[in-house]
Length: 603
View 1 (cartoon, rainbow, N blue to C red):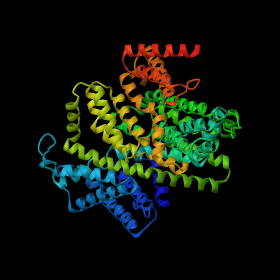
View 2: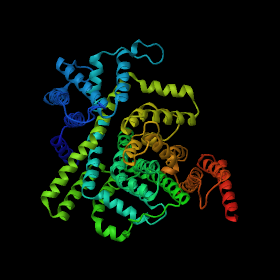
View 3: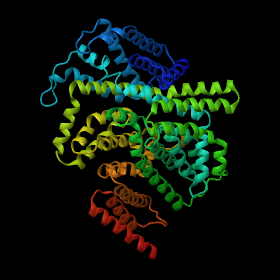
């Protein structure tokens, strides 16, 4: 597995830096590699969750055997007419085997629920013509379905897998290199220097360090495991309850996937699906991401004030000293941000950032052997982290292929319109609910792909801008990581905190409640996505920020002092009115908040 991970990292890094290779061939190699890693690291058996076995090695051989068929016949497949030229028996066998292997890898790495869901979509493609009514489709044969799923760019080797291979992987590799070179410790020290001396310092360090690291890793679970290993025990030592400590880390790590410059893998898929440049998405999402962390930070500050929790006693360094000791970690990040935002070259930017980080590591350690081992470990770790994402994108390609060949996406949009033909709020609530429901046990990329294909078109048809509609889906796909009962980020935090994951997910959802509110805000107020004239943008920022502060205070029960039940009710009403997209509600909310502040000051 180590050789596969290292080889895959080197191959995809070379592609990111400009080396040219056939797209389809590269995707089949990537798919075989992530299947290999998935089969050799996870069994899907709770009694023996990890370990290599003869069946696992057999699946690996089958994956490379099926891939070899496509590599050997790549030229012939490139010249044939998809959906027109007949498939050979070998093509049928190799394609069927590859689909089955992807489903088995999905069962092992993600869970049985998603594998069964995909089987349901495939069964609908095969037998849906026997249904009656609007959801029936024309008869489809096995050969036609396999041709569409495997031999076109609408299925297995479609945009989702391409984004995972050519874009997401390089960012994961950059995060792994930065982590192995001490980047995680640097972000932690920087956060401790910035906020560690304040009340509730450890929790605030968790929020800031998770935001800093999450912008690079883009994965809530990876963020929890990396920064949470330091912050959760630190919070528990200060007096935070284990469940609350885990919830703070889970909520902050989930927000890291919503904050530029990197954000999460779903945003790269969004860029490919919508043809909106990634730089434009990152700039538009920056304000909403910052509002999310403002709300979480205020909630943590309120809890520290209520419980009398003090500063982090380990925050001894100053910001200047931290920067002098680890400023070089910022060099590849600066290069990445510049290439992403100014040149709109995220792939090349991530590849160059990896090269710069590796070069600086070699120079600073002055130990070539140790540096080489660190980089090799980073390459293997990147492959291990990216394998579940690659498998999720592969299985998402199967779902998208099933949806397109049967036009189920259009049928689902029509169903949404039948519930609420002219009511955008109802469609948005249904979309949010469907996305969160899909997110129970499914990774964020797969959730986004399904919701983007099924629900986003209905919102767009009702006049929502494409950027806002898809970012709405991205937010709820990301927030599913902390939404009970199945919350992957909460389960990751629970393993460190030693607390009930359901309790952690419940508290994290309360801390991050703004993450569930912001998508509605920027759909109704596109100015929050920096769309519109400057005055409208400033007004939207001021109103929404006031609403966020009021909601956070109402939920936590503190705003400069402990709040009673009536105070919390009034602030909750004011916050809800301020985030509502209605002029009179904004005025009423502002008046209610101003009146409460005046009375509170007189007290």
